[in-house]
Amino acid sequence: MPVIMILRVKADPTALERFANANAELMKGISDAGQAAGATRHTFAAGDGEVLVIDEWPDEATFQKFFDSQPEIPRVMQEAGAQGPPQITFYRKLDTPDQF
Image (tube, rainbow, N blue to C red; front, side, top):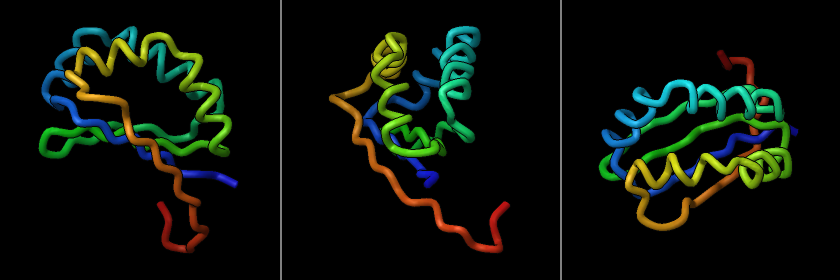
């Protein structure tokens, strides 16, 4: 059953955006690996002093296997000024007729 994964971390959204744009190949490589592992959606979002990663995965285990296998993700989080480990939450995707 598909899940929506939300990763929340206290970090500097501007620093993340600057790093991501300066390291587009690295970011695209992580994204491509995520797609190959089963992710169907991925985006970053920002709040006041926090960064969110919002993904859709086939299930929690598939995400966790991908996340644990990516040596570059800690570097990205460090470059974004992450303050502590991320909080990862999974939500069951609802099947409703208004989706797009």
